Length: 191
Ligand code: GAR
Image (cartoon, rainbow, N blue to C red; front, side):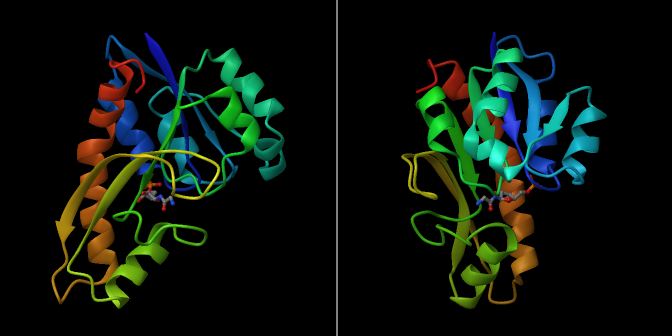
């Protein structure tokens, strides 16, 4: 059994979807959810499903030790970022080499980097007149959105689509693919 931790900063719909997917799964277990905010929906959402969640400050995430202690306590093998809006520190990267993945709501390498998160991404994509967008699942390295790409999926953008429409379509792709890719990675020795 592989234990995963999900890191999330806001609403946590992806966290919920991943937890539901792995309920009663024999190989993957979501053991804990960590956030960089106390008062966000993700806590209530995952606690309802019986998954514990904790909030740490930005400094605690950067310093690493309290977060790593918590991950050790919950015997975490693999970290999944799902709407986590903070940079992953060098300490965490060293403690979990090649074992931290992220989902980005666009087709990297376009529309990535600092400041490109959530609705900002969809607004930039629509403003640029793109004909398609999508999702990128990738490993984390020390640079924002630059780790090795694992998987991408696309959705068309119609001329009448608003950033909100694109967000809805991208979320649908996230729900469809992220749990499946996590499962594939963890049943292939995390590679
Ligand atoms: C998701 O669309 C995710 O791809 C994005 O935030 C949203 C979180 O939604 N992540 C980023 O922008 C990271 N750069 P959720 O809280 O409902 O899962």
